[in-house]
Length: 570
Image (cartoon, rainbow, N blue to C red):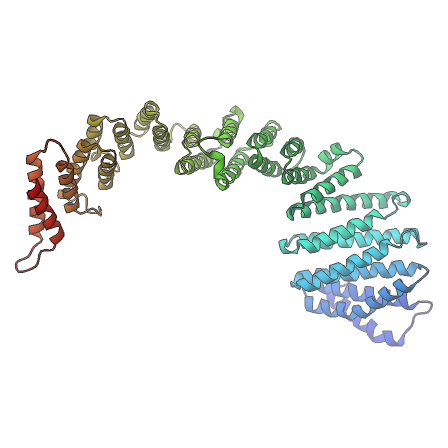
């Protein structure tokens, strides 16, 4: 058992103090170097456990000469002695312990050096196989060295920047375990060996996948499957996370169908549902139907809950946002696949039973629809809005009206005016008297060329809930762009009336600009309405003169000249 760090340091100092004057009987220089190395390693490890990295490195530095002595003597020996096994095992222990301290203190270069030296010492230990070294001692040393390398690799794996170092540790561990004589192992040794090989292959697969070495990662998964007596069945039952690693590697190799098969196995295993969802979302990115297939399997095996459905939906939406070409107007396969899954009765029941998750699903669906609408992918936008509508409760009438208006706008953009009218009517039913619905009806009338209907909506807008002068200004712009002068004049009259009443103070458009626009529209008519044109000129004259003070210059010279010349021309 390791003593406390101060005790270890005291023991180390006493030993080093007496070492020059003491030689235990029948101990070779190699054994003595191994003994000193172990004492210093133990002391350094004890300091490392207390996060005293400076003190730990002082112990490890004192061990460097003994490490060099061991390397030199082992390499020069023509006959392998049991002490060589012990010395190399101690050498691996030193480098791993020093690497752990370097990792904790952030000394990257030292960590790389220690990993390299630990790997070299482990390789030297593996080369002793079949050279006459004591079998039991060699196996124990090999297993102990592999375990240390595996632990250091696992620790380094927690730091993303140290992937190269942990890969080197895992590869050294795997090489060392390969040469262990399995036939000579006791039952307990065989169990330890199998457990370590399993952990090593899983760790290697994960690192290779993280480094995008997909073929190497798949090879590790296959090696693990070959290692277990039950093969693929044993992997699914005992190590289901390997199925995830294999599937992700297959996806990286552009083999989505095979990845889906592994995903189906994963869905039926005891693996965490989050793993299955992540794989389903990644599959969805490659092939929407395959991703939804894995999600269906998770649903059938009872692993999905409402939060999981929301999570899957969020992952898929994020993927589609990253790849906007997936929902062009010519292809909305991702939307069809995902919305088909969401429309399943069991999914609807799960989401409906959880109000909070249902609300989150609605927001994700609506935001997705808004994104598609912005990208002009109207077929997909309409489907997303319709799906969002289906996730609302009867009491959420305002949101239902918002969905209906959005569906109507998408339908209107697709030229489906009848459907747009129907959804506008539903929006009015869910949330009566809202300005957004009135403005939507105005746009439908305008697009269909229904001038009386558009003018009627202009007349009712001011009484709607949420009305501001901006809506009337937008009505002017919409009708002007659609070349409906009668509607434009009606909107301009309403806007000017609002300005007179002081209800358009927040509007950036000044009154003279409104009057100027109205006069221009009148002037373009074949049959000029002289009375209204004259009224506009008189009102503009009044606005200009009321701002003029005695003895001051005209504050609106440009506007004055324009109205004067336009009046003369008329």
